[in-house]
Image 1: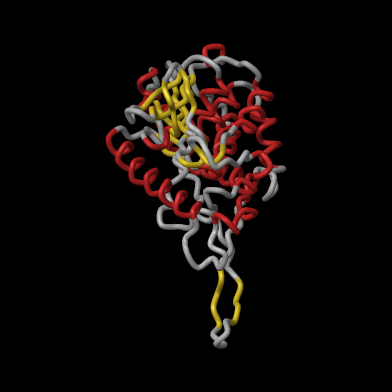
Image 2: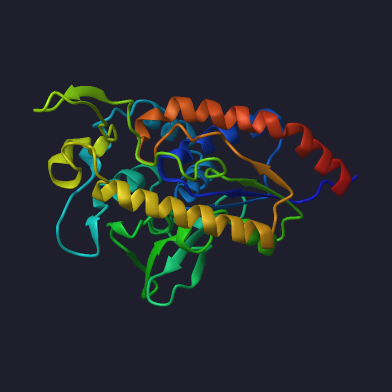
Length: 302
């Protein structure tokens, strides 16, 4: 029997994307090697690093990331197309994978982005890998758009959060989709603890919630000090979550994958980059839950 060409669509989800590492580890352990990998946003980061042979380095870095670790890499500015220029992150990425080009990777790879001027979905299939990854996760308002081939590009999650269609276009017969937002709509999106009880001037007892993302260090400016109103980042992340959820449902209904791996990540906020270890474990567990269906699909399509 001839094994069908396998495409792996790694979806967007900001910090929840660490679960992709667990998915790749479990698939590799079972001997499932994709023939194509397509990624959106953090899915492009994980997929690109995997194909560049740097997944071990990324995982080690992610597991050691503390609450304030990522903050030191965020070059905040108040001008330009984003609150964060992203140059420090790009330098770190470039130092890790060098000038690796997409066309030199062992299998076809595509990073999904969105053209700012037209809203068109753009697939980057050649050129500098670090630039393509940076463009794919350029979250509007947070990271600056990236200019590639005279086009300003932003986060691919705005047009194709789970790039099943891209895998099929490249030639995949069996598509495995990793949807990081399958069970998170309506849940907390920036990560909050259960809060502390305080007593106000009138003796009334109330619970106050506190953001616990790395950006908590800037809450005097960007987060409501009492935690009783939505913060700027809370609104941004919740808005992104709504877009990803609604758009993913629509895109996946029109072009469903053969297998969906859906890590249960509702308890993790979109900015909880310091929770890599837990999310990697859940990525492995979600893949384990899908193995029976994956093996069956392979048999049917072979």
